[in-house]
Image (cartoon, rainbow, N blue to C red; front, side, top):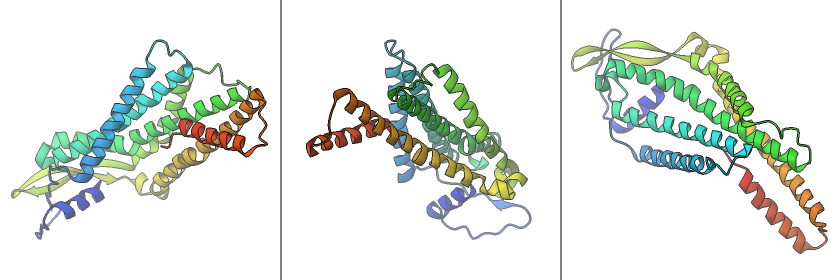
Length: 274
């Protein structure tokens, strides 16, 4: 947050060559104008919210009673909240200006806490929840195609709470990396009580410093390795299943090309990159 705050002021504000003695610092307000990057990201997030809402409406159809559609609803709800949180963070940052001088001490204090919980914890937990749910759907699909329905009777009422609990616990230490502390600042020749995020003792420790990197690597591994490998295996098993059912013989190049194209289409439909 502090790095983002400083970068935005370097880009959008004139340099302020003033010095203040003691523990006071000058209030530097971030502009309340949206940059082109802010607008672009906000539009993308709004489109994501729209897509998630459409998915929820479609899958709530009473005719779609299968367990798969219930899990897809859970993923859509998770993605919807993910996009909403990111929109909130961008809009509040611009309207509030990144300082209690513009929006008031109490409001800014609440904003910083919600920022810490949302940015460091909630968004990551929601994203990982979606990944775990998609891994379960892919694994369930693979076992069904392989005629080993071990997960056939596992319902969304079991999967959703378990995945949510795992995601919440894994990213819980991120909440304790920062705290909110008072920060006396000088604004219009008056001292105001502002707030800022400061690193806790846990956040400054060796484990706390590398924790975000560990969690990011783990998330990328689940998406780019585990989920991808499961989908590739599913494509192979499904192709063999089709060949067996149709008694196809891949002796002609033409038949091989058809199977290859079909496999690409299949994996493009079942693999969602996070």
